[in-house]
Image (tube, rainbow, N blue to C red; front, side):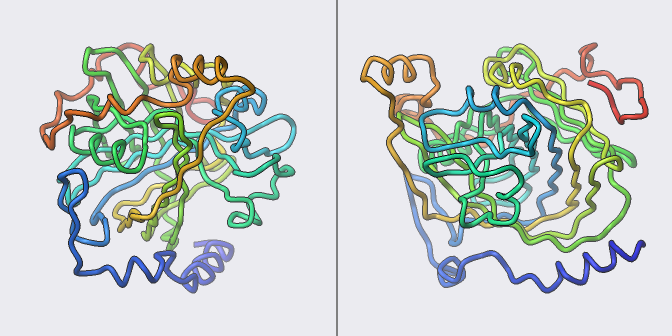
Length: 329
């Protein structure tokens, strides 16, 4: 273990839990929202997570974001950040399911933040991620995540494959269209204690919805040249906005958390998404840019049955040749 890793482990071990006191006070309470019962706080246990971040075109990212409240995080030189996060939820109030997040790193406010500054002022600049696509395994996860927190969830065929050297996840739509494959090389062991608060911004029924999740885990992280990953996008509707982002081949970082504890805050916020004219707003609603309508969650049940797994025999998801820059797309 390097001295830098050892120092990082010491510093991170002293970071307090990100879970707010209010969530801790809720322990032992019960709730039922939209017919779904919850043992408070809304939490998950023993959940493996992997992440990969890739550079993207800043200008293209701006074009994907809805309304005027959000701005892509800038790395400088015209680059933003795409974050792929896949969680294998093994123990939750709504059963087991996989959640597959494809999101753009953003700040919220009246104007964009200077390059790199959001990393130092995450709370002040309201740093988070705008979730572009969020397939999940079960109907009840769609019902709760979308109907309550406004997340763009939809049921899909998902997997979560762990080997000695890689972690990967693929998603196909229910009608068999290829969505995406994300694969990382497992980073060298670092054993970093990670305590993270992440804000998710989502568009739903003409509003910008903000929810917050807290994760605590010990994980392995690779940054820059030590990180190797690939992302492959298919023809599913949910990933089409991502194809315009000019996603870079070299990941910014990767992370592998073999087991994590998570808390989803029951508090959330919402703002109206706006445009210059009502016809402009109506066009954004009709295109889905301002999120799905309320009708998309009406009538959903609490099913926990998973669809069949995605098709891993597709030529486009087969392992790519390795190069000096990592794993190619």
